Amino acid sequence: MSGQGSPCIIERYELVARLTAEMRAAAQDGCWEQVVGIEAGCRRIFEQLVADEEAAQRQYPPEVLQRKAELLRKILADDAVLRLLAEPRLADLEQRLGGAQRKRLLSDTYAAGSIA
Image 1 (cartoon, rainbow, N blue to C red):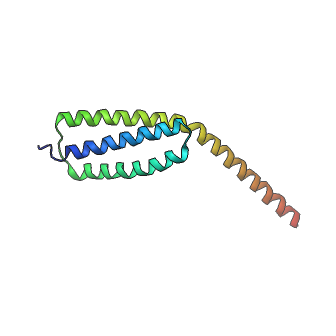
Image 2: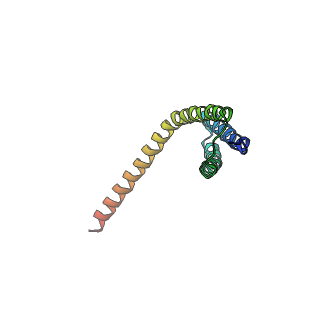
Image 3: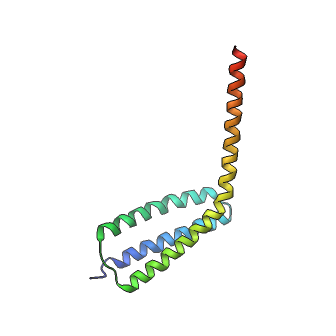
């Protein structure tokens, strides 16, 4: 089969890899708003990439498959670092949200009790 379209697919994987690396760097710097902004763009590109690949249903030359595999490994490695960096932040947010919810529940309970 022809490799036509292969450079476009690889360019998109390279873009996803670049964006994932930017997210990792921003997370390492503690710039979580930047991470969220980059992730939104990355998600759109990746969804488009997956849809294009499913629609194309083509066989790629071995060198394209090899480069695609390299890029996927890099994307997954960066994603693993992102997850490790995000876990403590997510746990902190969950704890804060849980504390706020408990305060609201106590407030609602005592407010209801004072009406009676």
